[in-house]
Image (cartoon, rainbow, N blue to C red; front, side, top):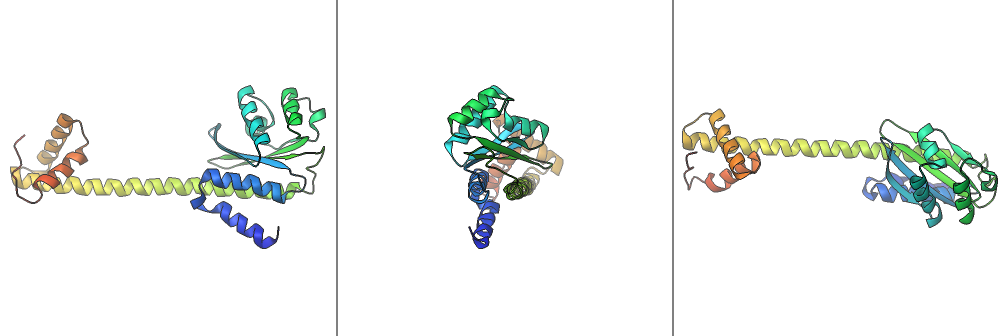
Length: 235
């Protein structure tokens, strides 16, 4: 892959329009294409110690994730808990997780490395698998680490952007709701000859009686009495 193509793929990975799942899948696929000796990969995002998103380049590494979650142990979970890379040079010699080694070998995966990148909001684990012992040597690790670092930055920023967007939307909705309520209060004050506090109490009483939000009552007041065609009934 040329530098131009790599740049394009990186830009696509960073695109907010892709969505988290698609971008995570792109990261796993990019690792397979870019890291020497990497035949398969999976990427996971964790928030507050819980798995939030997962993607894999092939079914085999995806199956290993499910088995680790059921067993409660394995290289992925160790990487998440300890916050450090976890390597397996040859699954035939791996003694830490015998069951995991057996499953990896059954899938034709002999070597692996789980890279961890942590931020204030997420933990990203990029796991790479080779079909030969020691396939993921030192020459390929820098590229893998760069991808993990880039991916972590992208997803942390996307989360922050998403939270900012949600906050902005909530603020906008709040301002709009306040405007509707204020307009309804004005109609009530004119129609009932009351002050703003009494108009608000009117809206709240109707809200409780109808089991709807105050803003919904306010919107109904505007729709029904805003034109001045009908009188507001006393409450």
